[in-house]
Length: 121
Image 1 (tube, rainbow, N blue to C red):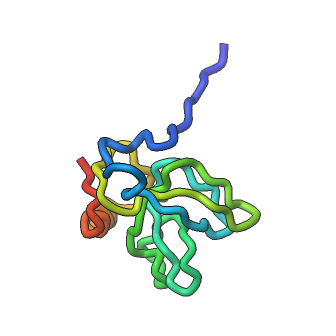
Image 2 (tube, rainbow, N blue to C red; image 1 turned 180 degrees about the vertical axis):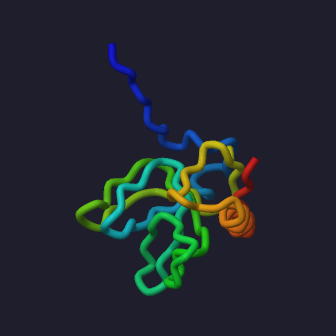
């Protein structure tokens, strides 16, 4: 019998969030990425589109700006999605980071999220 791997669920990283939709924001994900739920995101300054955070970038996406609420397939084209943008508590162990992200880069990104009121527990 094969092993089944269950993907992360939409919002599975959330501990709590503000009432209504205050914590969430509808955004556009830039083409070229399959983004899992719970992925820490950066915002490309020139386009305003969201991509997985990239600490080595110099286009705005090096700064953590939110967390993908659900999986978004923007592999072939830009795609709409929802992010946690502010006022939330999240389970740090449930966040997705790009391969190779260092402990210091994660700490820096969590501090940037904290500036928006997204607190990792």
